Length: 488
Image 1 (cartoon, rainbow, N blue to C red):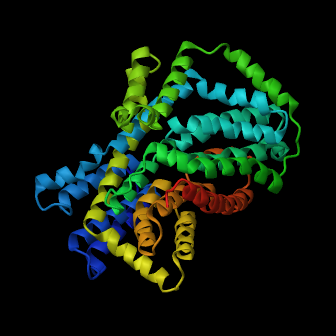
Image 2: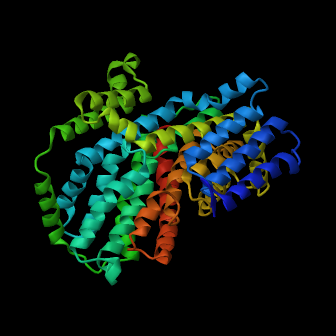
Image 3: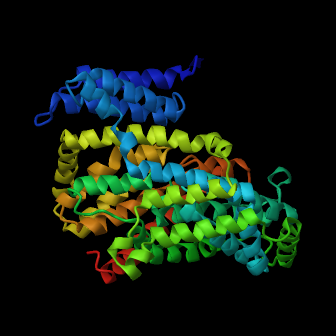
């Protein structure tokens, strides 16, 4: 039931949680009143996001308003509104917003489809080859597609459905297991992995960078290049395993697909030669990767280092100057502006929860409970990460989950003795990999699940299997790789 733009039942639950924490639950010893009241607003905001009381941007506006009016961060009215709007000055938020706008060029120019069909034309002789073609295609566009939903659901999924349909695999007539069932699962389970591989591959990743910097007093600031290098080996191993693991668990009925290469080549022929706009997109794509990875600074010295967000603005400027994107395209990219608004609100609230000492208090509670088990830090971190990861069964938003739990669990892990960068990279990977679990785990999942190729039972079974595989790879292969790199 809705009243205006609000879903009444989840809205009332969200309000009850806020008021209950604010007025009923006693303030724990060692926690200030302002910190506890901000927690009440924060919990209510997260509950509203999970319950989808309103669009997330609208919820963010309410959160900013309440922080400003209640003065939980600052007794001065002018100081309170300044604090409430402080998230908009965070450059990482603008990095994601601008990157989302840039990614619009992939679909507008058709470059995303061209990449997908090209790799299918190369590797599409067998069904597992199509799985790898979809995987490589998603990996290539991931660095400049901060919306994992747009990437996996908007670009790769239509290609996957076209391939499945060309082989007569349709959920409506019970032929999903021919090939569509397999391809849909590969389509989905690559998405969390590519999301974990780049700061710019999914919207909440910069929030993680911020949390780690805050918790370590800015001693650890993970750059775009550092994240990409750290995730390179475990990410590639996971990508190599997904098509094979899915094939072993749910083998498709059609195993040889020589017609797929013909189909992809026909699609490429229909598209014709690469257009001027596509060539500009390739140039911008390469330029962003070059500058984000810090190659000029490596070769020419620190004087040639460029801010990551400034690089994103440079890419967008080139697309505007060349006409690949128009200003109307920029204005119409609602998801970018929506992300900037809700991201700013969540970053602001999380930042002040940390400044007011609430995160330190909660992390000490988590750390104390795990420490009582008497394990050394490796086992303790394993327990910590597992709790953090599988708690995603109760979330329909990675952003809500990360905002609610990451900072506290990271601080708890530090207190348990875990190496700071190792722990940060492991939790960062888990924050995307946990998308694999359910059909509501992130925006991509309902799109692919909704196509009907995979039953809920199969989806959850495959999700749990891949969660174990991915966590093992990230923890073992990733941990050894980070050791070689000198990160811990």
